[in-house]
Image 1 (cartoon, rainbow, N blue to C red):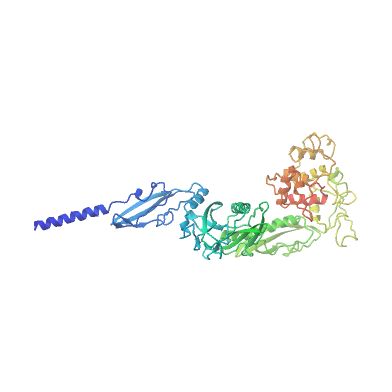
Image 2: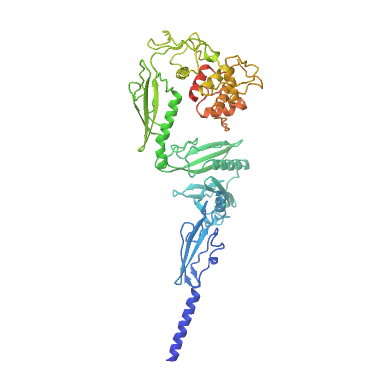
Length: 600
């Protein structure tokens, strides 16, 4: 009996010992080359541990069940729990996954850890089967694929968001033929490429592209990716210029979403994917680059912004087209916004102006408030503008123009001219009808005493403007005039009518003169010089210069180019009927009136 008890005791001891050995804890060093507070490499999570099956539980985001580590950006991921259950024991590791230091590091590491075995079961030196080309890589990167010879390996969509590298065998040839398959790893606007140099199976033949054409294509591709976030397209494509000696053609898979010229139309409800093909030609040799574009749909916040944007654009256009404090003609009121909003108008006083913009001029000025409302997909936005409908009769005083050297003002006695005016219309100047393109601006500046007419009851809209005349007009239009300043220009005498205006403009840095001691009085001002003075008066000149706005932009003096570009971008100046700015031409009184009315 004692022997039996001793034997049972010995067996229990052995079992206890075996259990103790098999239950030895897994240390973090057993599964990682890193330390727990600084994990950057993938983990090795064994299925068994000392004879026991191991069940691993991970957070699934930063550490996958197979041990793959997804590093975050830009902040560390702390207290990420990894748990092992084995042999009745549980071991938990609370680790910190270190963030990438930059987006560039993300794409570089994603490319580094992407093996050829991820896309093929063949030997890279002997391809026979099609390749699987995923559209996503490690660490949240996206991948686009290109082949330098689509006759051998053609990249096509598999309709599941990824791509297939179709391996094509030709019917004649000797030996294997090399192909460069490129994976471009993309994260925001950072990208890194990884090349796979592959051999298509025997009986394949192709041709080698000229190095110059390959380099041009690769250079263009890099520039295209730098300027376009192809996985989040919200604006028109930026298409870089063609490299020298290379012809580029564009072809879009869906013209309604992306045109061949790169114009993008975003869907209001869902994202769209469009393949955009770029063909590079040199002589008779061509090569293609096909890039998948994800056109991002409008978000809820953007949908809500659409009616607001449309209203703002409409009001800005109206402010440019009409003199709102002196309406004399009917207004054209938009019914549809630039982004598709439905536009409605209401007037506070239909006896002054109707909901359709029809005005009714009477014996007195009439004030009214127009409310514009935009509706888009159930989102509404409204704003109001105040208008003054000018009365039917106005007096004009005679005298020399104020800008020309004093005088008693303008004649305001209407003198109808039945040869050029309707019989029921009052005439303010005998050489200016209400149909003149600058009429409203001129009358607005007349009412504000910024400009004036001549003693013979003419305005002379096509006459050129002198430098001193423009200085006075500009100061008055921008409320910048102050008395009491002095200047030492030799051609500006202190008893001249324009001395205080030139002195004020000089003191405020609006004018500098045509030389150190000469203002240039009496000379007609050029279009480019008016742009410079306007920008200085408004303090709006930008350092960015768009050289593509006018065909004759290179004829604009260097000192005036930023000013002209700034005013063009703000809708203040434009070109003639052929698009030319004509920088050295003299500017007319009508042109000055229109511009000054716009900047007030």
